[in-house]
Length: 284
Image (cartoon, helix red, strand yellow):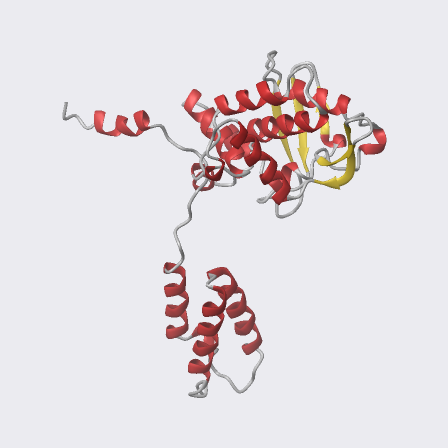
């Protein structure tokens, strides 16, 4: 039986070590190893792929375990969203401030990721007297690009995300010609009139995160604890904490999650709920 030449496995291991030392990234290492493994599968002189060897597999496992622990961002609370709306969506709010308030309230109520909300266009919005229906053209778990729908109810208060969005669209003077442009875009400031106007380019991830953190800093929060995903996790956490009997199916549909494990990563359980386990052990 033919086997791999004796030098191939040490050579593969040496190259893997060099990649990991340079990047300190398990993801980068996995991409390189997968590419090289695929390339070696076409070499006729190799009976065994060197990247299938136990030592290479153990190296990958070791690199995975050496990863730094992920520090998750803190979920944004309903009180924080109300504070943002109070400060940035008042009667005399500018287009810049109203865009910020709408971005936060829409992402919070719709459990939106950045790559979802940044691709929403005015044509994807369908307003009715009771709710807003949003077509999500791209979602992380939508591998076939079939699209998803998110429904946000009208609340009849100043914190209603639907009313704020309509107000933002009106102030930005969006019309039918804007239907193929992103809903949340960059702004151009006109010093002569002290006003802003929407550009055609969508807000970048870094700019979205920057304006959110600046906003939270101005409200007295530790902005370093929060990111754009804090809006998504905050909405999911608030929904569950205010109603523990929510339909799991509805929750997964609203957040575009395929599995319970993916959904549960976003929900921060209250301590009182965690203590219910001990209360029900029959020891009291």
